[in-house]
Image (cartoon, rainbow, N blue to C red; front, side):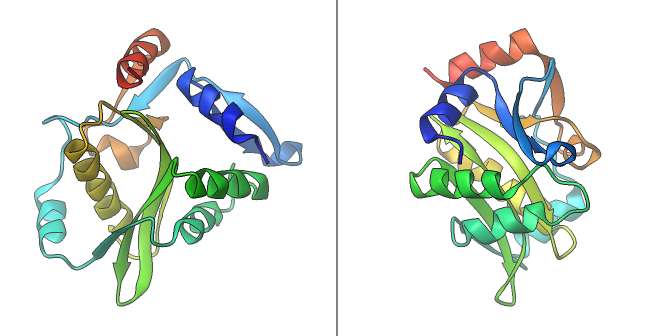
Length: 186
């Protein structure tokens, strides 16, 4: 397991851990030259259809109800950087009140969700999954609303992908990212 203190220091310095399955799940610290950011202001974009779905309350939204289940679901992919050691580490972070899950439930089943780490006013999104169409997107909207309500400054998505681009996500250079991070850690 990665020591809790080490992981907190790493996040505050712009790093995050990933295991490399091709190297027997050895963990490396990553600090990308460009970082994905999901906006927390009016630039966070939700399509009309997704907004309507969110407002229909077809999913029951929960926070930290089933953290371990969320991270394990996130790891169930053909290629994943979420090793057993990562799962164990983040479950310990969760027990310490540092890692959180945002979940969408439907008919008593976990339909989708995401998890990440919160330090001061920065949230570091780690991974998301869905079993039911749009469930992870609904969980992301729930996360953004929660972060806004708690005056968070930064929602770090690490990298950009098509899934989060639709929400207005964008990339910033490392220097700009560190500026945003430092503002969120004050």
